Length: 217
Image 1 (cartoon, helix red, strand yellow):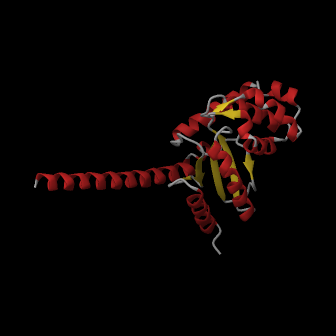
Image 2 (tube, helix red, strand yellow; image 1 turned 135 degrees about the vertical axis):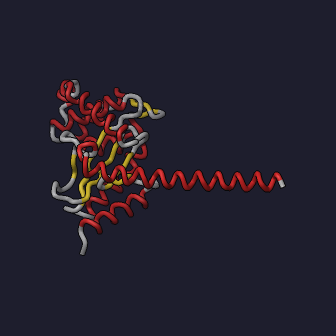
Image 3 (cartoon, one colour; image 1 turned 120 degrees about the vertical axis):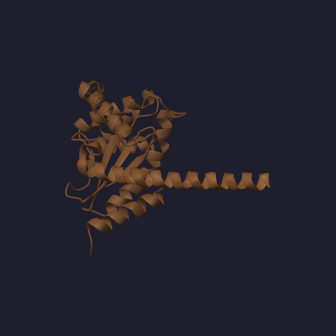
């Protein structure tokens, strides 16, 4: 009898845990949805790189670490989504350099941006990630020889990446990541709605749902 009661109690606790977890995620999603309307700047800052039409009604925010393998693996998927919904979907990139040394790579990206080479540099670094990372750690010396591949003036990059405003950008993005509960990368939001559960298919479904909502036929 005691064993039956114990098993029953365990089942109740497990059910309560999953119900509580579901309820928390739903409440958190609603909270972030309200924040997207009331505090839009937490998702998109004036300094944020944007790919796609400014008039797009669906915004995909990606908190990313250039040294993150999963961030790199999602890059082709995001590009495909932008190609599938031209003029309707735009990408906003935010920084969450959680890996050791990633903040220096972010500084390089921002310096490349001054030369009009931001997206080309990011894509190249994703593709060559195995060259300049080891065990989730950045090997900065291995980055420099790669930069001429996208036509960057490397010496100018070395100077521009030291600008104080880049440090402020990283600090602001990390603060916003904390506010939004981003603890690992990539962290995705579509019109303020967090990606739950994580995965390419759920992200595609979330994007399509927002496209349908914002562009009803």
